[in-house]
Amino acid sequence: MIKDNLNTLGELRLVLRNEKGEVKKDITVPNIITTAGKTHIASRMEDASATAMSHMELGTGTTTPAAGDTTLETIVSGSRTSLTSWTASTNTVTAACTFGASVGTGALTEAGVLNASSGGTLLAHTTFSVINKAAADSLTVSWTITIS
Image 1 (tube, rainbow, N blue to C red):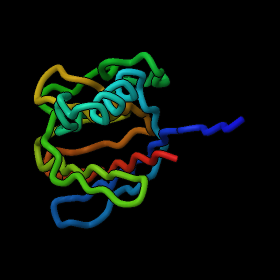
Image 2: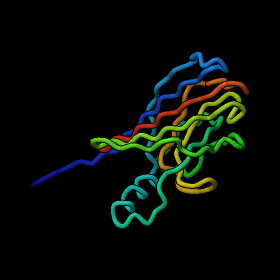
Image 3: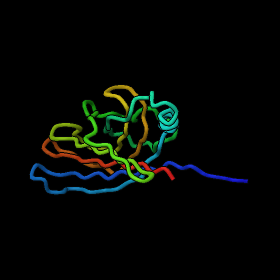
């Protein structure tokens, strides 16, 4: 009997910089690929009719993410931002996004990847220790999804 296990794993790196570009915080955390996200991946293999992932969003929720999540727990208003890049290599894809000055400010504790500028499918969701993003700061997020 042939048995193959297909797994999806995610990890993101968050780098907070001040207005001078100096690193204030640099962390890497795992995430969960949601059930809706896995369905989205499968549908893209079938016919690519599902809209590609295109945005990231920040929040202040602290509840541990679950497979059934479809939104962030507590969205920071105005934080949904278009991806700056989406690249693929052997069994991985990496989405990158920069939240510039005055975008997504506050005591941030969660993030997600979505396929629309509002609403949409939540591919991945994570929580992390607080990142205090001031109005002049920028936050770069690199989100890597590995299929193994």
